[in-house]
Length: 390
Ligand SMILES: Nc1ncnc2c1ncn2[C@@H]1O[C@H](COP(=O)(O)OP(=O)(O)OP(=O)(O)O)[C@@H](O)[C@H]1O
Ligand SMILES: [Mg+2]
Image 1 (tube, helix red, strand yellow):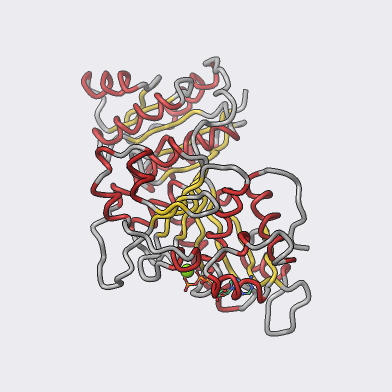
Image 2 (cartoon, rainbow, N blue to C red):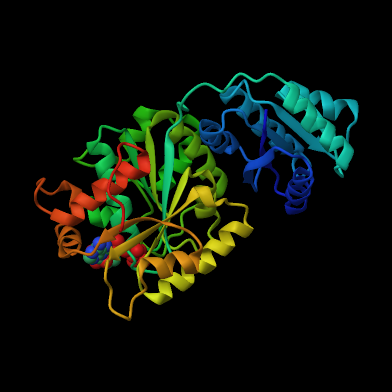
């Protein structure tokens, strides 16, 4: 049986060593790398197991053993069948027993030695694994990230959430663009509460409390975001986000995130790390493509994988004039297929002025744009085959 491996380590050197050691083992491949061993690790692991149910996990405990063991425990609770190899610099009785109790099946001492690693892979290969059952019961997180300002991130996130809700998915839209609060603007709502109250109430959060705190859009999705006053950077931290994300994926089908332009915000980075899909939104203008190139490079350095990242071209023109890039040029420059093209339409601006999503218009109201948005959601969620940018 081929070996598929998930690697969780905040240590780039550790991940690299595993990668290099695997090259020498035929029939082995890395499915995903997680650059942090956080309480949300199980969210990504479950998502990856859906596509690769046979995969084993190697967890590096070295940087923060207590937190890593807790993360490992949560992974095992969520996916009891998964084969886990724990690793640390110490292999004293206490360390090894603690990792076994947390659910590890094997242990490797660091620095990793080639022979020991190969033997561990052989044990993994020999262990009969029951395929981790079917689709994950956890909701999915879809993040929208702009390669430049004004490329349509908020428009796409709001309409994605709206269409998900219309498709009868329990959906939460989270606005993490703290400078704008545009999701509220585009949905015509004035939230009473913000992520600040969510953060303050995480310890006793349940669905009733959450839904009482946040806005319910007439289309059925929930919305929560930053305060309207730009001068207030609320105390909503990365670890709060991680706890919040666990609550959301356990209770809702889909979580849609307006990640704004990211610019190295640790809350946004945590959101991207928890996402099953990151939609990088660009236009055919060269500055946005150039920035997308920088973003993709940065995300790869941070341990994201290309499967997770999907390019969406907004205001897409099939036959652009010379000032804009063609689809082929974009794909070539970014070395990545374009996942979807959304046409430009005056209906987008009309929707913003109306303060309601395009998808909320009468079914025949928005024409091509609305059709493309629905096609995009269907393709992204695997709902049905649809027409992509051609
Ligand atoms: N497909 C489209 N066709 C025409 N106009 C569009 C389209 N998508 C978005 N727009 C318009 O472009 C403007 C910017 O959109 P939006 O606010 O969604 O972008 P953003 O990336 O979130 O911007 P910001 O960087 O300010 O957060 C809006 O006026 C919006 O109506
Ligand atoms: Mg925006």
